[in-house]
Image (cartoon, rainbow, N blue to C red; front, top):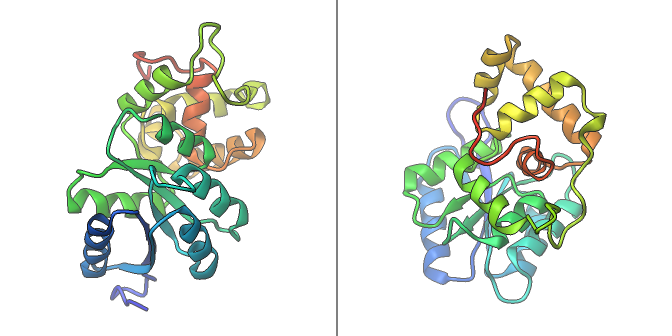
Length: 235
């Protein structure tokens, strides 16, 4: 196993992409990066599910559009079968307006990254999702929600009804609203005059109450329920 030099275990990453050159480039980048370790590489969703169960990666770089089992279905299967703690799924996509990305977020992915992101951005993204952050630009998420989840009557199209926020405390609602606006835990803590650890506790309780698997899903639900509306401010 790779030694990071400070007694911290390397982040083990499973790379999933059906394009050989893309997959090979990602693997080479990760192997050259301090603190990273390649747990395996898969050419499709089915192999990704099998390798995730075998290798128990910390993070999965998941191509979203693949023949056969898509990245969405692979994400669902991996998270359903994973032991605790489950791997973080970071979706790789060519398009920032992609209905598949929204589906992956609903399935439990921790965020998404465009394939044309640079090496530093990609490595930072792996580190971010590994430590529990959701990774996506709020503006892009708003466009995804607007474009692919709303029908004329305002309900989520092709999906289950959004979670009922009535179970949340007023403070939990405040935290969800700020996080959905793109604030980090530290920024939300500063805004609410509480500690960052308390913000994390509120988010964890929110996920438990609403039956959600990730911070990304909390953001999606905030938009689906109208708690946060596209174009509004964090105030």
